[in-house]
Image (cartoon, rainbow, N blue to C red; front, side):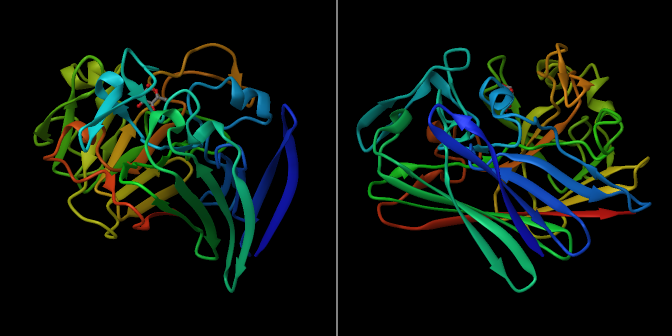
Length: 347
Ligand code: G6D
């Protein structure tokens, strides 16, 4: 196991460092202090060929102008908040209207756009880096002085675990995730339309035309039923209204039926790569990259829809306005922790 630290770039006067975690089998995860962004994950295909399985860039400047949140930690609140405000204990908190009059992914300068401190963590059989950040009361409109850390650890079972820990000096709201776009073909050789996905989820949230939650719906009989594995293409080519709404694909929260039980399994037949995700979160947002514009290239490959897909484990979006959803509030001086493990394999 090893951790290599490198200079990645500058933002004004601040340095951005890149950390690469590598295990004894050659799998590696590269991540940087800007937004805890995962820039590369090298995993073997069924023939043992190590290739990159996430979308990313090779310069800080590309990330600063990126609107796709590639690889980034998202916070304070992942997903949308209707009307870009919420009420807590009788006080209304206005937030940035950065998406059709609503609030998306923590606002104009969310956790994805700040520089985090980093500390290398090396334990028996694990290589890691712990990012930490102090978000002052009122940052991006959110209440509470919040201390937050994001710990990436890689082990010799080709498992990457992301552990989020936070504590606030006031009651506040928190919903964090990682926004990596996976593409198991390796070095973006193919898009993700023929990736197969299995989700242990019986319910999903239907969305309105602002992509805000409308109602909890049963997946039965729709392209959202992933209880038996099927391709992303099935939704992309479906006339089902919710797939059309998402730009001919998916951009939806799925309520997980179970946790730590192989609840999310992504596979790509041609490479023989698999990704099994287990989490203690209540939901996962499947976003099939339908808003990736067809302009320019990403690492030498034409940018386009479906080039990667996100499996954002998290709470439910707009939960601040839905008391019937699992709570998104954290109490004063109570430390909260959430963790998601990404196990890369072959078949
Ligand atoms: C679009 O609706 C989608 C979001 O879910 C995604 O996170 C973002 O693009 C990058 O706004």
